[in-house]
Amino acid sequence: MMVQKKIKKGDSIAKIADDLVEDEIVISPIYKMVKEYPEDTERDIYQRVTCSHHLNP
Image 1 (cartoon, rainbow, N blue to C red):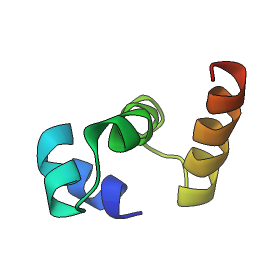
Image 2: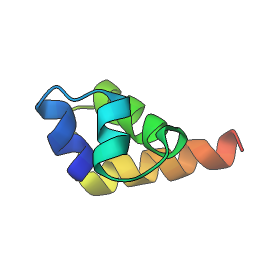
Image 3: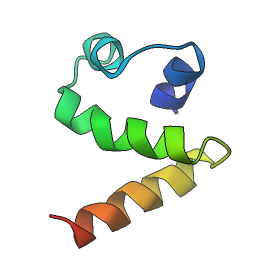
């Protein structure tokens, strides 16, 4: 949810990662899914990220 809010504000992956004290590699797949599916809920994004992670470990 925090990533979605920060994307809506126009924040970059680097800024989001810095603000959330997280590595860009963790934020990047979430960022990509939110950008690709902006109307999805937090739960939908979580499912997409975890599903794609299982497909591409």
